[in-house]
Image 1 (cartoon, helix red, strand yellow):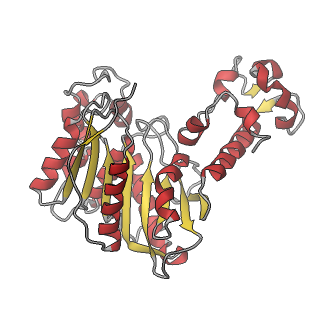
Image 2: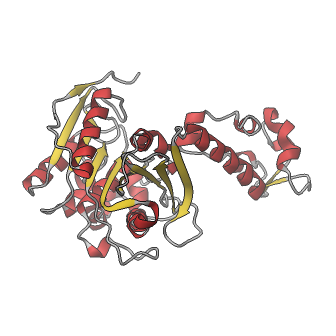
Image 3: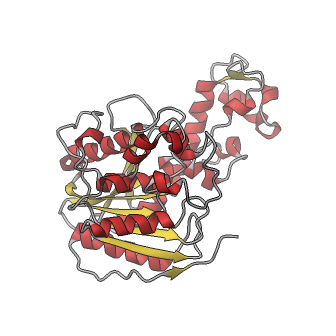
Length: 368
């Protein structure tokens, strides 16, 4: 780890864990697909000979990726709590695409000999960024207890593919979990999904579309399995693209390159049918998975009204919905009280432990 981190001195550890940005293109000033010593930041030139493994006087993209991925792997290992067995970069869609991989986290010491319920985390990033590497920071505490297994899912981003590729990937990952449940001692009938922002959208979609065959996709070897999930924890996810485009936000949703436009391949205003199909609220029906939503009242990116609309539509359909208002919260928040309620929600729906889960508002400090 100490040998690898100097190569990434320009990055914070948190940024690497969450998004793993890759600077190769920015450094390659003449765009010839390789890096000469003078193209590297001065502080990294001392590492040139070690990265240039074929000794041709240049760092190729593959050489750069190799050292970058080794550093990311080392960081992932450092972030994984003791007592957890991490199985990373498992292909779930039967492809070589590095985005179509998942990380599986298993407790080294299980609380019982029963199959473990699974908590699946799906990252945010506006469908155009983010990485599954950050999932361990969310599911790790549950896995460490010995009561749960954890999974963090990667998916294709909008720079590579448009909707519905993202949900097809997520559904393929759920089917993979079910197809490999016996192998890893998992309970295929008890799967929770949890996501934030774009990930909140995708887990909400998983919760409402398990009975929509036209959106299932055909990826992977486990098409004999379904993608239904047991419960959903949604952090500030977009739920209705058609209403969100009219709601107050710091995102300019009149342009051609706001996140939902990049996802759909065009502005919501001009892609209304696609926008409707891609909205979780469209697919709500009785029997959908219970949902716990946490959303900040001061969210500048995804308006709080998205949460209230989703909550009302779920309740109208007779679906259990818990909306926890994060007073003063922005696009992201921390709260020990919220953490406790999420644990109660998982324990109730995945382990059968009865609980009265409060939906009273939680006040958090506004972000500076």
